[in-house]
Length: 147
Image (spheres, rainbow, N blue to C red):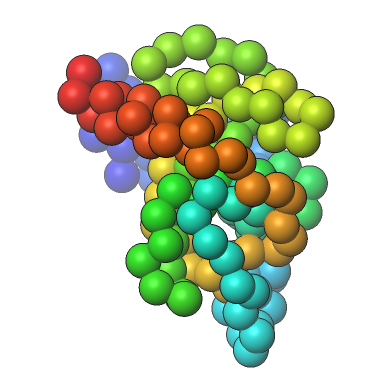
């Protein structure tokens, strides 16, 4: 239920009258397929992967085509779980963005959208960032939390 002071609570039976409606149904159909994958892809810190990011709520970042989004593996917790920082090709500014040059695309790492994922979400490998660049990203990421 929406608890905003300026809005009345949204009732479940109210119609959604948005000009943009996210594709939750297709994503919900794809999730069991991803979850039932038997083989897990091997990954390492510093690697950029396209992952099944899905369709999410509000300002949470969504995947794009086929619900995929490029992400940097910032921390490997186990063979099954990892922390990733998603990327965008949009050149946005703010303390939660950090410049990236993955492949030939200039964009940004989005620190504010970092999340823990299961390795079943990994789709395909893109590249490995240099040790120097990774160190700079990590330093900026840590300072993001200190501001």
